[in-house]
Amino acid sequence: MYDGYELRNGVKNPCIGFGTYKAADGKSAEVIKTALDAGYRYFDTASFYGTEEYLAEAIQESKVKREDLFLASKAWKTEMGYEKVRQAFEESLKRLQTDYLDLYLIHWPLPEDGYEDWEKLDLETWRGLEELYEEGRVRAIGVSNFLPYHLENLMKHSKIKPMVNQIEFHPGYTQELTVQYCKERDILVQAWSPIGRSALLDHPVLLKLSEKYHVSVAQICIRYALQRGIVPLPKSSAYERMKQNQDVFDFEISEEDMYRIGTIPQSGWSRLHPDGCSERTV
Ligand code: A2P
Image 1 (cartoon, helix red, strand yellow):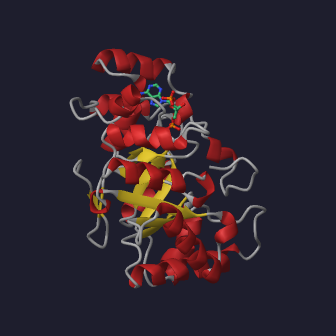
Image 2 (tube, helix red, strand yellow):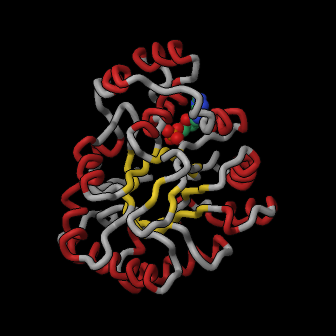
């Protein structure tokens, strides 16, 4: 499983990726170049992040071959709807200087200010993704920040079911209901902010485990996602921490400690904004 997860269509989703949101604001190209040097080949970006061009620049300079990379991007809230999402996809490809994506996601289930007919809008957007997939422009399609009731709409009314759901997931916010819903339907869960945006680094339970396993708290968080069968997409601006965040295969968190992590009180950002309707968005 740690050599990647097979999606429903047989495409392999690598088990750890590099998150490029904010990518150290203003120094994106440099940070992404460093991540390539540190061995990352799976990059998660989005039109909203503003990092697609930097990613393309870093890839070009690195001379890493396109087929050795796994590139994922997302359609933003303002790019929803059949026509708009097709256009958005083309623009992402152009910025990324590639002719296909490995994965393309709907970033949030609802547009910025909510939308009374969001079910229809999601289905129209999804139809755009289905077509891109059928045309061979993208190897896999999915969603992000979808809760079970958003997913139900697509599961019931779409031809191709979402293969991935990328959500906020870390020991401080495990979204059990959404994770369980996805697992039961063969939808791969990916974790944004798997370290909880560093808010968990001094959590007493995690500090104790970090001492016990002789690893950092960040490594405990990343390993926790892996052992849950969830794909962590950590971010970092420093080479050593980028390396460290991939160095999570020499230890195993015991079942008892997995349960212990599971009792940490829950306080994720998206708990307060479950549909993403707020000016603060990722
Ligand atoms: P830095 O860029 O200085 O490494 P998340 O991916 O959960 O959103 O967390 C990102 C935050 O976690 C960043 O602030 C990053 O800071 C920090 N971070 C990433 N990896 C590590 C690590 N191994 N140890 C400590 N902090 C880390």
